[in-house]
Image 1: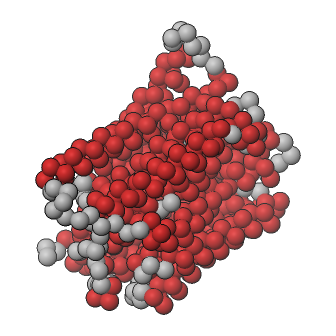
Image 2: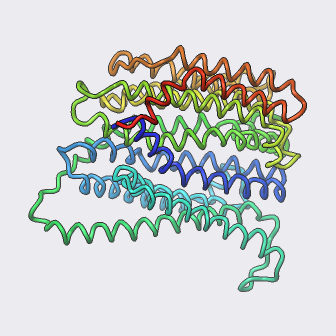
Image 3: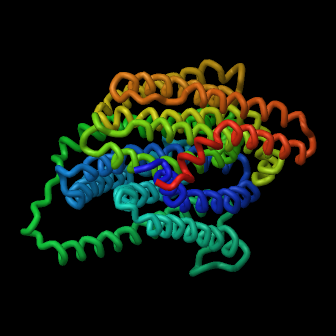
Length: 497
């Protein structure tokens, strides 16, 4: 398998995420920041943290389990999928069911005592998203790219339709089925649209899964092939440390808005205001996250297939080349976001732009996270996921500690600095693990050069008042990158094998 193949998969598998997130960001974020107050937007950011944490916990990294065990010949892929999904279903029924029984207590704990419906809608979203994780992983491993795209874009389309119905049509029109629009529940209507879209995606995947299973049963009689799957204990031994990694990742990425809710100012209203400012800055960092997520969608199953059964004979050059390509695109994307910020910031409401000075730190943190994801394949491929758990825990401790220690002096920069330091430490530790257990000659010097060139271009371009001047600096940066890497890019991506 070539890096050209990985590039193609990144484009295809990431298409739904890129288009979906762009549509959601350009339309939804602009719309929400226009109709919601900073306090309401802060509530959304706070609830998204808990949503992400629950999803990370309940998926239990069964998506990576699928890549690890279904890509090896010793197990039947279909049996691995079913065992992983059965575990997830049981976990969702037990945990989400239990939390629904305690929804009043949870709402009190989150300081939304008169908004129990928020908790219920978040739990519904979590349930459907978790149940969709293994089917989506199966599509990626089986390289059913276009169905993956259709499912996720369908999710976005339904979300946009529901947003229009509940936040535009309902307020403008009369009562629907006896229901009057309640402006104080704007956050609740938005959460309802997310839950509805998540349900649509899950049932679409469920229908496809049942169809695929029925076709397999017809083509391959059950008695003809013994279906082998690893024991649940084996799955959990591999996935439990990765669950710690996922939870830590959510905390590291979304800790800022929730931390500010409790620790920034003197009142909850003031805290939520600055939480909304931090959340708005994170929304602009999404442009880099689009690439990182698309790359991650393709890279993880690709690297597991690339390694095959024998790690000793795996071609490790492709891991170094993939990291090199990531460094080029990530550095250019970060520079482009900062150079064209005067345009991009218009996507969010003017009242949400006071916290954009933290954007460089957020972009740096996200760039390091993508780099860490490359290094982290070492402990995933060698079944040393416990090292990943230790690395992630260390990073989270750094993020939280720096946020607490620095918030009085640096205000909302504190959690941004904490996130940056967290991913820097995780990068270093994951690289050391790779050097020990899965040595790859990563081009770290070149990646550092890319970062320095991008930083220099941003520093120079920021002094230009006119957008054409900033654009000229970015074009010059592109030319420098092309001069440095055109031969390697042609040999890697354009030369026919």
